[in-house]
Length: 398
View 1 (spheres, helix red, strand yellow):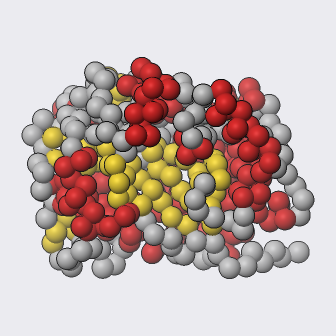
View 2 (view 1 turned 30 degrees about the horizontal axis):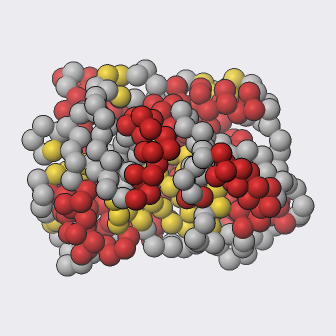
């Protein structure tokens, strides 16, 4: 029997970026300074983050991969220009490369100040950046149950997005150190298995009562129903420098969500996994990334990570094929796996001269789309130089 999945849900991406000084390449405060210029270009689609050394940008809801890729590239270009006007640069990475040895400056925001009161010194180490994908769902109940179906695949997404090998100016020998840092807080990592939206709400209320979160927006599980949008939000991935890879991973996630929605519609609440299998799969994915082996969370078997990626694509294949995205997804993922992903690229940049400044430069160029081999640029997207100026067609707000 052929399943028809109907109208494709919209999806959107939120990306967090680090700010660095143009001369030293070290992490630099400056979100409050660049946001006025960024807002002039992007409106409400840009904002500050937990730390003054970070900014966030969001795409609008998109239907196609090409549309999403175009918005990602354009919003990055806008932030490059806004940062450049203040003597700063931006890059996408799960952890900072240079200048994160001491406590970072928390933004002067009531929510973040409340988080510091709650989490105390743990906020000082929370200098991490992620990629969040929102996928439209019919309602909150579906968003919660979809999370059960996504849990086994979250470690594979960790491996695919792993882009944080450096921390405190040294190689951690992990591919995604951001994953390890994030799991030190009580509501990061895979969500619990929930039987319903009511079950989710009861657990959330208990966490609020215990003081483990400031508000529902700080339930930082890797999958959660969005509190203000009709979407399920997948938060498991490092911030990734290659915009085309981000677009591909986002539509892959959408295909997994649509597959899950069909199973939820048929009454399947999702597989219950041994917590040890899931936590081990996370750890192995964070350590090895796309180089080595991973744990199949369904079976607890150790497999080559590329086999786990193939399993994920096979799982999503019917939806990707129906939406006309299968060929592009497979092509980009083949290239990405062959290259070893973001963590391998960071290490390769360091190995050229044993200089971490080269890693920051490479990440900066990849984020702006100016590095050789950084993916196909969508048509009509401005090319940006390292200084933040455009060549060719004007970007947003021009």
